[in-house]
Image (cartoon, each protein chain N blue to C red):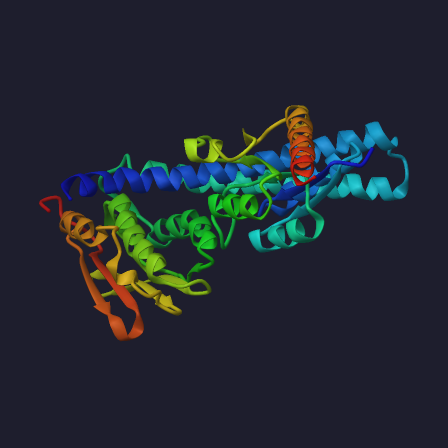
Length: 222
Length: 131
């Protein structure tokens, strides 16, 4: 059990980064094939007709779109990675949650689930360890993804509550049979990390809602 | 000489469609599908010689699909074409080859040709056994 707990966090980081690099490789493969197709068309067809020109333009648009996709993903990956080298910092909770939902959306897609966010404007900055908050959110989302049947959805949102911030993770859909016997051991891992950010978790089973409450500012003594 | 039938299975639609078009330009009978369900339907109706398969597909794992294909027709050759850098012994024991994206088409073509040749020989062998 201890080993599982100890490896849960690096596993989370590895899973996210692996998912990212997989996605980036796909983008690069599309860019390569699109450029290759353009060369092929010139080589095999001569490529002078209006129809060919339209095709070239479509290919160039595709190359542009893929480079934009990669660039966007790299931005999230960069932000996600940097959160781990700052133990305490002031951060935008919406941005921290957006990193996770974007990075986990591929994992959700493969389980035929929808992972979405609904962020409120003008939320105050939080001072604390964003990477740990992200990790706990990941654990909660992963548990919900494990138990949801295909076609379900998970919503992530944040709201201010006095001197605290509530992060709500709400699942919607059919629960898979036997999913309560999940082998993730994530609940104990969550408890372990909750203390370090002075956070607490409440569950509302009737709404399939899990709320992570964190202080807006963690004191240096914590 | 009949064209080699190649089926590309990848949820990255642009990748699969573009590579399929490039294979058609090189005289292959190539087709792209974007999910496991469509792949199985094409396999049942068109019996491709070689399948280029991504391991991460919505709805069904790549390994599950590989097993289903081989159970349906063990002579169909499968080349895994994926963004995942690491193959497993289990996968390598079943598939013809394992290629990591992005890859140059010049590296893919000889693999497809060899896989198609292997299928041709397997079909001949099974025809001889039936006789």
